[in-house]
Length: 487
Image 1 (cartoon, rainbow, N blue to C red):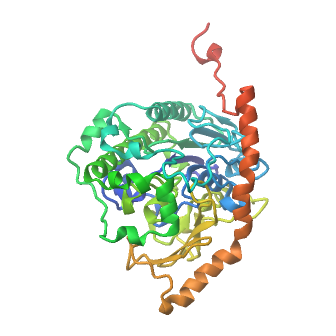
Image 2: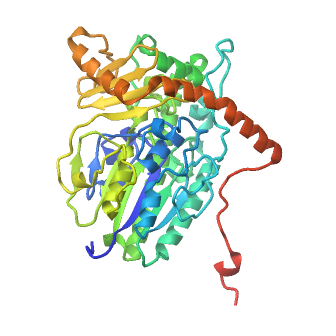
Image 3: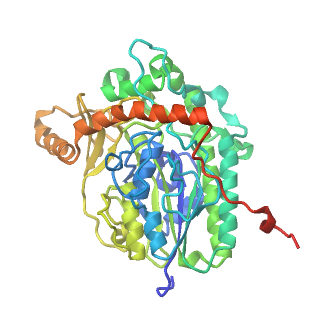
């Protein structure tokens, strides 16, 4: 890398991509050879976590470097303030052309949050409409979204979807940018919506995994007795209290994991094309490449689907940072997606106007030891509607849900998180230490109030916008008069 020039930055994000089925991350399932090659030349953070296991809150943390309880972004119908600087603002102020292609699921009127421009619109709505409270206790059939059909074999297989169409557009626009990249330093974020379900898969990728040896979850005989109050609430939110047997059915498990592996392979090929475009443009040696995801996916683990869970398959993410000319290394110290804004501003020499709640990973990329600190993920929104946290410190992982019994796991001895050690008198000091970190850092009662108090306010806005036909969805600027030959 030319040390006299600011490096370009290509940041690639996939959606709902658990590392446990990616060969590039040491998992079994999806053959991700482009990511594997990238990992071999990167700082590979093998214990990276989402700061919130749901799209919009996770992405608010990813953009701002602040906890979701700091930004007030609790669910998929929440905005965060436009006056909170994002890494895109800081990179813009450092002289970068900042461009977004693909999904970022910004909610509210600000559809840029510091980017100079977007190359396409978002796949999801920008309004407050995806905020939902708890299911009513007297209606066992309630489902905010019935996600179960997306995980049944009868609805999984070769086909086409809006999600695939969107990622094809995102990729085309991204390649177009890279092939005509400006001379000034640029930062391009490419954000795919796959391998998020539905598991409709281009046929060639579906056939690649016809006879694949895919990992299947293990279910103890007493699994239902081991669910926490949080788990039971999430199972009810997803309708698994009445349809859980369908998720555990081996045919459906194999289909959903085949669909995930095939779509992860599809995204991996997209990553390969982006890296090839960098090479062809002569930019590879001047460009930092980062690959990650917003959160994971349970894929039937513990009989659960989707995200919103604090367990490893939902909370863990891939994180690769390739700085040309820097020796590759594997880093097993737990880190967070929350750390990326501090890392990016560190890379370009910008000082934040307010302290980030994440830390820069640049020293670790350069070979320095990374201190072990508490890594926190939080979820307070739809389906549970009360403060809920995961805290990872060393080998220990603590789950706290306000008003419920906690969970404590040793991930070395119990990587599947089956043996809850909370309440063990021999571990009382450890449990007390982890709980004190959460209780001392977060205002639990305020979070509890806020998740409920804002619902009727957003409903007034939703009703008004529906009545007057307004929306905040981003409209990309496309000028056909100058796009092709006109003279």
